[in-house]
Image (tube, rainbow, N blue to C red; front, side, top):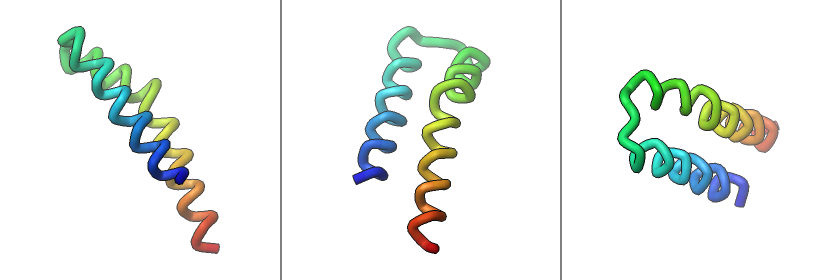
Length: 51
């Protein structure tokens, strides 16, 4: 379930930056602020599941 929520959040974030047609620097900034924490939390959760 956690992975599904993470994927939805990432796809939602990509939709947010594709609609206003942001330039590549703005997209990278948005991803750093919004997507990177989601990915980080997912990998932490994944590692915890392996232990």
